[in-house]
Length: 297
Image (tube, rainbow, N blue to C red):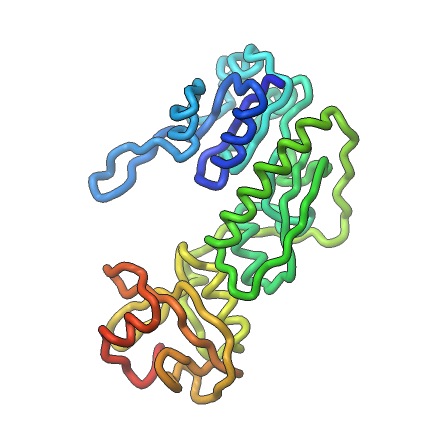
């Protein structure tokens, strides 16, 4: 097939590489280089770098509302466009241009967790499973019919980073299966069970130790590594990256033993953390290098 690939972050890269190995990728669309790092130098996106490595032509328009950009897209004569976390709304002329339309790799079991942060939200909500849905795109936000679906359990210790990488691999395999069966009938999403995965707000990251241990644990794992659930350890801001629920009780925030912290009900054990300005470290390294207060706040 002649495929246009549209994606930006690291999550999109496995799908690009998989498609390029089996199909003709006629163009890769991605977000323009953005200023990043201490020097604020413009950096190409992970998809841009992967496309260059594969020797694929790259386009990065600021938006796709210009009729000239839409015509350039249509002139590629693609059979299908595959969209994975691209970051721009696709206008109707773009959705309609490929012979088989545009399909999206979405990291949830649609219609649950439509929107921007489905992996974070699934972990934070305590979902037992998630998955990858391949959706025929339409004008609404993740409302299109589903072409293919694969589910996977969420591990009790998985962070957003862990699950992100697993789902990226599942998406890469599943899109190849979907492309091999196009055109095919898609299944409309049911009206029941629709939820929205709102973009993560940094205000959600401060830990409230009065909450149950299970909720605190999901907050830590769901926000790891970014933006990172955090608390104060004395005068130091501490980002918590991995944890597990354990038995224990005490005043909320009290350090019961080592890095076991009492919550509103139950306790969590911190497994990995990152003090401000430092690298992430295992709990045993933090215990060796820091004087712990009586409680975390």
